[in-house]
Image 1 (cartoon, rainbow, N blue to C red):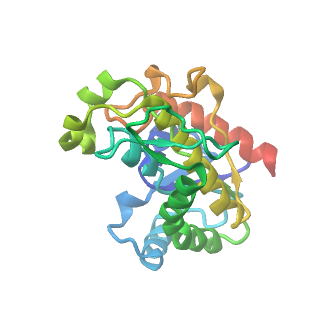
Image 2 (image 1 turned 90 degrees about the horizontal axis):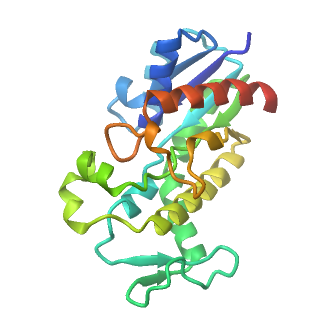
Length: 238
């Protein structure tokens, strides 16, 4: 039986709930924030050792961080901005002369800087399990429904006065974040678990039936679909 250990921050919680609900014995999950208040990789690894029952899983699947795109786009930025097109690097995603135009590669460099702070922890976890295949999965796609965000603002409650972020920019920055994380994990020889298309709308946003009670996470139903994807893809990609 293939065994996978998922380790990450808040975006693993929905998968953990799905594991508990289905009594899946092929996968276990650890939310780092539930076992450690530290950002030190060494201290986190120490707590992981105490928590993990199986120290030789077939696969390690990480989802560290992931809300970087939401912090930039879930609300309208105090200085409204648009993002350059990936192909040309010049055309703004949203053609609005009143927005501060950020070229694609400038935003990508900014996102690389944000996600690379997770590199020491990701490296330490993978090295703790040297015989395990390496995987990672991304956070859920952005939520387009402003009413849901207003009614469930979570940590963004104090920013509601800024109004909702532009959906096209949300999607563009999310894709840039995916690219930045892919670069980080490729450097660690880890493969991405892809989010099934059944979870997203045609334009790439999270479907409403998978919203959690906050504006950034997926619910248990989302976790169930992702759990199936993780089990299936970790077996296929090896």
